[in-house]
Length: 233
Image (cartoon, one colour):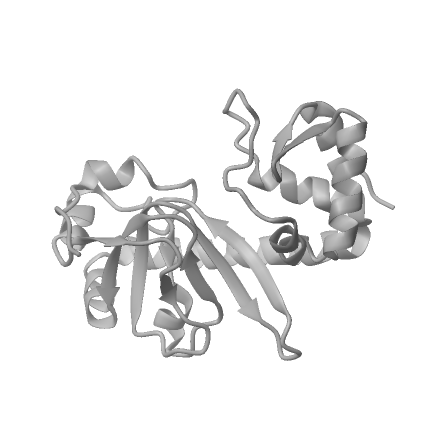
């Protein structure tokens, strides 16, 4: 279902730091937005499938999306949770390969879809966007290296604390996670078994660092938990 078009100022207002589109001037964004409309997408709708050809890109306008992949041994790995303003699917769009992951809406939201031709025409007309893409690819590679190093260097407790820190809305007074995730899904995100996740969360709850309310996590003592996040073995 197509909704009204966005304007450049609306899009600039939701772009996260380091977005591929943050280097664009308002008139450039208006050019991009003139090529498509905002579409409603329901919870659980798959925006892109792992393994499919990369023939389009998606801009997440509202809602939250989950990125996951299935490894060669069949294990599901949750890679990230995406906020509004994120550009999705640009890797396969750029190199012509298959989608590297699946992206699924975890709540009702809206998106802008752009075909390969529309994206290529826009980039050709706006070379600063190409430079921003290269910078963002480099940032993601650096982040991936840091994540791999973290998984090797940090034990289960600090690793879980680091992921909770990533998912926490620190500006909210309640200190709740930006998105509600089950312990099983949190385990897939962190790379720790559900049993160990449950054991660690229970210990932190007993210590007064967090509160568990019907399966939802609320951070009570951020300073102590983030200190744990900085610890190594």
